[in-house]
Image (cartoon, rainbow, N blue to C red; front, side):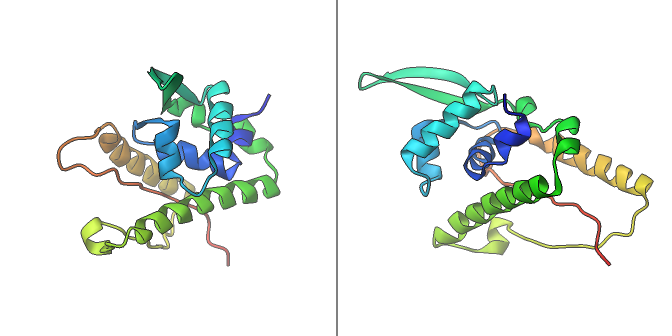
Amino acid sequence: MKTTADLLLHPVRLRIVQALLGDRRMTTAALAAELSDVSTATLYRHVGTLAEAGVLEVVDEQRVRGAVERTYALRLSAAQVADEDLAAMSPEDHRRAFMAFTAGLLADFDRYTGRGDVDLRRDGVGYRQAALWLSDEELAAFAADLRRVVEARAGLGPGEGRVRRLLTTVLMPGVS
């Protein structure tokens, strides 16, 4: 049986999970439209793998031209890598996971810039890096503060004037 880390180490599966973040519900056809660079057969295979593992759940089924079309939602709790799985990962596993993560991020940015009408200021797009000098205790407090800020808004669903926005964080020690 694969661990959640094994499931998410694959770039396509990670992109499927990322596409469903924010309480999105999508059919495989909708996922295929969003991840248009992934072949249909590959997408179906990886959606099936994630559903079988309980990372995706079927929230609706409809008959379409004699076939059953399933709508999937992300089970966020099942898409979290357990601390013991993280601890068991080798440095190479972490590099692969980070590469899959950044490949998904790059694909998202490519789709954004590829749409033609790009205005970073208007769209609230930014990418920055800041150096913070923090003790372990200060880092824990910072992480808790950030978690509270994100959680306060993460429950907001689609609505008038709302646009799904992706917040991506990477935190690591600076190397001297």
